[in-house]
Image (tube, rainbow, N blue to C red; front, side, top):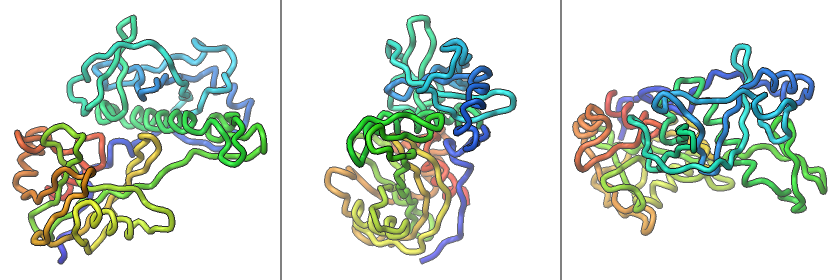
Amino acid sequence: MTSEPFRLAALPTLSRATAARDETARKDPERLDRLWKAGRVLLVDKQGRTPVRDGGTALAPRPALAFADERPAEAMLLGEQGDESYWVLSSDEELRPVPAPPGAWSLWAGAESADGEQWHDLRGVGSLLDDTAAGLFTTAVGLVNWHARARFCAKCGSPVDRTAAGWASKCTGCGREEYPRTDPAVICLVHDGGDQVLLARQPIWPAHRYSVLAGFVETGESLEACVEREIAEEVGVEVTDIRYLGSQPWPFPRSIMIGFTAAADPAAPLVPADGEIEHAHWVHRDRVVEALANGGQLPDLILPGETSIARQMVAGWAGR
C-alpha cells in the first residue's frame, strides 16, 4: 500500500528560530557579563506564560539592566540577534486570568498583570509570533521547565548549581554535570494510501477536536519501531511505508516531536486504547480540506492548532 509522497505544509511553528546559539559564549564569564548589559529579558511564569504585546503577535522583553546591574546567576542565555542578546528569568508575578487573544490556539487561559500587561503561553500564541520570537520563546520555556525539574543531582541527590548561562548544571555534592534533556516522541499521520486519514481524540480534549497519533519513544527503541508500536497500541492497526516528515520542539515539559507518515488498511477494525483514545475514525480528504479552508474546523471536526506540527502534517497530506 503506497501513496504519492507529501511534505509538511510549512516549517512547524515552534521549529522557527533566528537567534544565534553560541556554546563558547556560555562558558565565557566576561563575554556573558557584556552580553547581559546589552541584553533583553523574557520573563516566564510557572504556567509557561510570558508578557506579550500587539494582540499576542510580539514578545515584550525588558532591558536586562532593569533587573540587575550585574548578571544574576539564575539568568539563562537564549541567544544573540544582531547587537542584542536575549535571556530568560523565571517569574512569580501575581497575574489574573484573561481570555486568549484572537487567532490564538489555546485551551489555556492567558493572564494579565496588575498594570494591564498581557501574558500568554507558547501553545496559545506560538503561531502568532515571528520566527525570532517563536524560537526565543520555545527555548525559554524549555530551559525554565528543565531547571524546574532538575534541581537535584540524579546520582547523589544533592542540590545543583546552574552553570554555562543556564545550559548546564553542576552537583554541589559529587560534581556531576548535567545538560538539558529532551524526550523524543513520535507523531504519525496514518493514511490509507488514497483519500482517507486516520484521526483520533483524547478524552480530555474539547468536543470534536481530533489529531494524528503520537507517543513517547521507549528505551532501546528505534523511531520506526515506536511508530509501529504506538499506532498498534492506540488504535489496534498495523502500519507500513513509514516515512520521516520533520520535527518540532515541544517543551511541555521537554519533548521533541518527530513527525512520520505511514499507511494502514482502513478495513482493519479500530480498537481505541482504553483511557487514552476516546474515539478514532477515518476522515476523507474533502472534509479535511473543507475544515482547513474554514480556519481548521467544522461543526464536528476541529483540527490540530497551528502551533503543533500536527497541523502542518495534516495540511501537507490534504494538499498533496
